[in-house]
Length: 607
Image 1 (cartoon, helix red, strand yellow):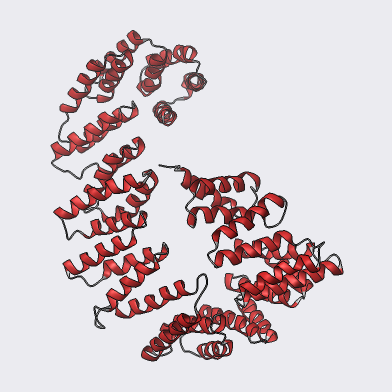
Image 2 (cartoon, rainbow, N blue to C red):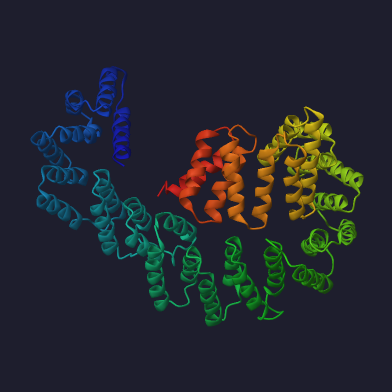
């Protein structure tokens, strides 16, 4: 922080001097640059000689900060005091010099004298917002943060405005990591500045260290709610606070109580449920949607709640080990929704979800095929919607053993959306289809084109697939092993994970000398992640990291490991270790930028 303040002071000096610059003053400017360099290098005696000369010249008051600071560094307190008092005499209205005098007393160890000076200058403040802010800034520049706070608080009193200077106070509390005051300031300001809620949540989540901080904040919020039970911003804040502690049922209870108490239309609750879903709190989300549905068909959230209820159940029931009976009921619920509201552009999402259930979970891909072909005929679809439908249909054609139809659909979308994300996705699906079929040369050719795709993810996936192929088609034995691997990947595509793992395990038995070990480990890890068997996935990923330092999958493995530790296993220490390892060892990876951002966030940078 001191280096930041010094830079600020130097900029003031330079700016002030620049305003008075004339060609004849080139030497003075050279002296100033040299003095600043001496200061930065810690050569204070040399800096003092030049600065004394510069400051003595007319109109060079802008160099006061750095000159005064040099004198303090050298403990030349008498000269510093003489200089400050001279400036006070010349500019009695400029509180900066009075604050500097107090700072001098602090440096000399006379805290009582310093406090007397500071208190007096604050007490003399006029009812002038600009003057108040300037005095606080002067305290800040001399690192007297508590007196800057006192200035702003006194300013609130004389202006009779308890909300004044909120942004400035928040910044100081945040810098000082003064959690109690930061909490209180946000609680006080949010009702009149609700737009600051996202900032408050972001700042507090970075500065809070443990559950105790959240519980302290929770107490403060509840006190506010007691005084203002209908203040929506406090309900939103309390909901966020519960969610941070993973107390989703408590958050839901508050939201429903607020909705009932205020006889609201459900807007606050409906908007909050997205946060439940994003955090994987599906059961709480389901309860929320069910409550909204009970408000009746005339409520604006009746249909949206029914839709999101089905989608949330879909997210739950298609994760991990699914139950066919449950998914069959869910498919029927989607069908009821379609029967009630018709098949149209607005219910396209339900058609796609229903088709996905039929194709990948209920072993009815032909039904899905017919549904998507019919959906393509719906009026009003945008080109993007039609294109995405065709990609989904192409996938179904693979399941119904019509690879040529799938290939034609992918090619059609690829050409229609050449160079666009959906077009690149179509080309990559075509490459994967060729890979499944063992047509490795064509697949690799498609991937080589995609290496220049604007989508980093597609480009990375295409690069990995092309390298996988090129590394494993050198001999007939390699190609045969790769074909078995492609068959295993096809089983994953068909949502048959257990069969896929058996096929992957059999590769090393049939071809002991194969070079697919890291790819096999990575495929298994992905299967385990989808099945929510995170510890098994971690074991696979660690083997990739430990045994294949130069492999094509190692950076993927490291990022996935860090992501699992952060989001699924709640081990932030391990998450930081693997993010850091990725950043250090694989600086050219497409994952590095995101890893660096996530690592800094975990470390608490920027708080």
